[in-house]
Length: 81
Image (cartoon, rainbow, N blue to C red):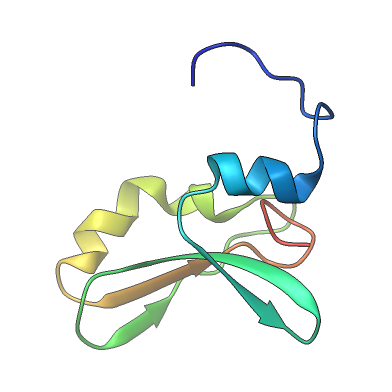
């Protein structure tokens, strides 16, 4: 990222469309953000309370070498509503 952008300068949807790596899916009416990488048996990485999927940044590529990795932002965290 280049210039500083205040967190409240735009809506969450606009912010996510611009900066969020990964995909979005609607789950029970909630926009849920996740990263999907790799191939093979699936593994789901769940982050801790008051964090987001970036908890797993340093682990994603290593795990994706052997597994299909899904790392979601839990509802109300990261880019998920």
